[in-house]
Length: 500
Ligand SMILES: Nc1ncnc2c1ncn2[C@@H]1O[C@H](COP(=O)(O)OP(=O)(O)OP(=O)(O)O)[C@@H](O)[C@H]1O
Image (cartoon, rainbow, N blue to C red; front, side, top):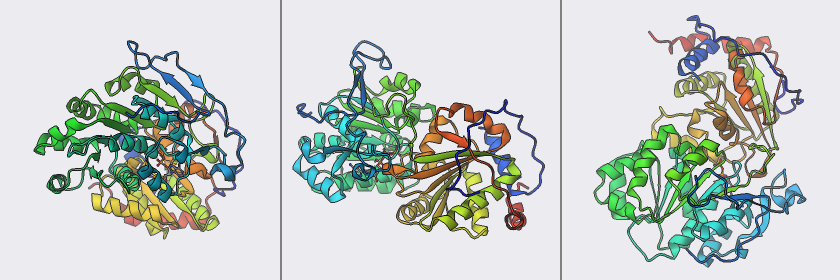
């Protein structure tokens, strides 16, 4: 099978899911992965801003539920639709708008930094949200993966902060679900702050030393804090003076809002919000915003928040220029198939850059080990690695080509690795949203990409929740004897991983 030259076969509906079988204690690669998968189961004045092309905005009115649509829905013109791919900065012609940053109400210091960063025209989500955020409104924004949401919330927030008197309080708090994403958001903030000498940014994330963060905060109290929820809670409970500093928050951002508001993080977020003044502006951004998230967004936002959705009705949440396929195969073929697909992809594209998503940290480690033994150029990242190892691998993968990153869901959301050529998802994603976010690591900034989902026959039920996306079945490759022999040759190594 050629990974890039796959003809797009017709989508085929299949029967109900089959029962998951019992796994014999045979040290085949596929069976071991199956075992693990089975165990887990599946203020400034409002100034004249630009027009809002191809965007739907909805205002939830005061006194009504936040999830209810107000009368303010606006659908704008499709000014970008006829731009050539090259002009628009992406193959689908919709990545950048005609609006330049220097046409907007942005301070000269920010504009200079934006120019240095190489940004000239705004993305759709930036164009749509900037004027509303500058009016001081709460915003819930939905925009496809890799379309510049980070700048969309950081830039106006920095504009708000630059108008405040100098202080040692935290004025902007950005919450992120993963450490890698928090580091990335802080790096983007540093770019935008280049000429704002009076503003600084600090990151607080788990897996690093709390006392070191405490000392650094004392020595240099920054106005912008980017944090993961658990560590932020630690500081609230253990760092003297922190709960006072956080009372200075004027803008709160929940990046990957739906993830932060889901059950896993909800308690931490509720607690953190209880320390922050109610008189603040709140911004929630994500590529996926379910109705449920809209219902609970009032936990963080004012009732009259604006919902800005740059994914047009009838349009998919994934990118048209990303070719999505799925393969169904028995588990004992998953390793040979994975190896075959990767080998062909590496041979076809000298600039290959692949992410293989696995279901758990343990499966990730196992898959990385096996693929390394098969002489592919592998790096691994998951929650059971030290934070310094995670940061090292993440930085290396960001800068490199010719690498395959085997990852758990720590890389699923928000992480911006440029030019990823293929995202392979092995086993069931946690849900539809996770499938979309994982896939969104490729096809960023309007570039082309490819996604393959590899499932076992009893995992096919997942297809019913993504059947509105352009995902079609691909034939499984026929595994030749050399591939089979190569994978079989590493069985003995795997025995080391079996529980005693
Ligand atoms: N106006 C712009 N012009 C050119 N590049 C931009 C612009 N705005 C942002 N970028 C770049 O686009 C890339 C994607 O941005 P970002 O990571 O913020 O996307 P995202 O929408 O948050 O993605 P995800 O949904 O995966 O979190 C980054 O490399 C960023 O530097």
